[in-house]
Each structure stands twice: as structure tokens, then as C-alpha cells.
Amino acid sequence: MHWPRVEAIILAGGRGERLMPLTADRPKCLVELAGQPLIAHQLRWLARQGIKRVVISCGYHWEQIRSFLGSGSTYGLDVTYAPEETPLGRGGGLRKALAKLKTRELVVACNGDTLTSLALRPMIRAHRRSGALATLLLVPYLSQHGIAEVDIQSRIVGFREKPSLPYLLSGGIYVLSPDIERLLPRRGDHEVTLWPRLAAERRLYGYRFLGFWQSVDSAKDLQRAERRLRRVRLAG
Image (cartoon, rainbow, N blue to C red):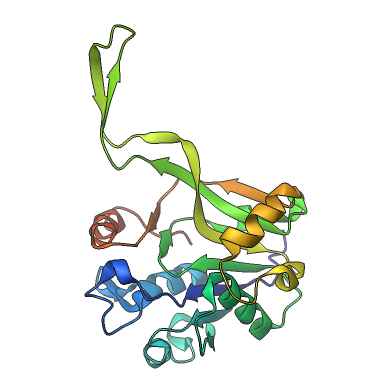
């Protein structure tokens, strides 16, 4: 199958307050993980998927991102920037980055704190088949605690350590059709405003993935991601 031209956006405008003090003087995406800034892992993953151009939606200390990445040639990518003069929220930042791309092709967007071994091609094929405006990566929701299993007499019959719960979590990676740009908020969070609307209109789809996925939102997440990265290779 011909691999269509697909470009990408990384949403890296947040302050990363739950990672303080690591983010006191740098954006969240430049916090180091396994010896490299988080965004370096993401760019290598995107390059291995065949992505050629990436726009970084950025705000807080964004000049540091530009100083570190430059044009992206180190990663075999063409990297440009869509900085926010005032905070626009994830939805507003995504809309501004899409306008910067000026494309009528599909776009992959990902949160700047997400690591995964996901192979993008099957997700993109599923999106094309669905006719959706947006397809969201869905991952298992894992309990942060061990659970006790009981029988009908309330006797404990076993334990399960941090099991997968019967729910799906939005994994912070999307495949977007070009018509979505005009629907995104100019300011605010698309996950709060636009996603429920598209779901009600049956124009929002999900793509289930059971492989390696990790959001880095806290110091504990950072430690967990360090351990997991030693055991997995991000997909190529």
C-alpha cells in the first residue's frame, strides 16, 4: 500500500506543573528520560514511522525547545514551531499548529508527554476506513493500586497487582482529517469541547492498542517510563 504523506504535531505548550521542580526552568518536553529529553524520544519515534515534517505547538520557555531541536535535521525531520504568545489551551494550540502546516492531508497529533511503541500505519488505515473526523488512540486503563478479589461470602480469595480495568483511556495520540481545523476552539481544550460534540455526531472513532504506552505526568511516571523503556523499543 502506498504510504500517504502524513505530517505531525506535538502539543508541547504545557507548564508541566506536576513535574516541578524539574520544569521550573524548562518546558516539560525537555525533561530528561533515559538520558534524552522526552521530545527526542517522540521525534525518533515519528521519524521511524515515516513522518517527514513536524510542527511543535509550544509556549512555556519555547525558545529552549527551538534551541535544542533547531530545524530537526538531527532526527531526519523538518521541524517548525507554532509558539503561543498567550496560552491558548491544547485545542487552541492544535488549531494554530494545523494552520501552520497548511495541509489538506491527514495529520497525526500527539501530546508532548506521551511515549509509545504504536505503529502508526494501521491506525491511519483504520481512520481512513472509518470516515471519521478524528480517531483517538485508546489504551487500557490500569489501576494504580492492587485489588482484592472476594467471593459471595466476602472471603478474600486472591489479589491482583495493578490490573487492567474494564475501561479505555484516551492515549493522547490522534489521527485528524483536514476538515477538523475549522471546528477546533481558538482557545481552550478540544478534549472538553470538541470531542464530546463529535462523539454525539458519531464522527469520532477509537483505535485500541495493547502495546507499550506511557504518559509522563509526574515524577512517579518518569521513573516508571525509565524502567519500561529499558524493556521495549519504540516501533519503527
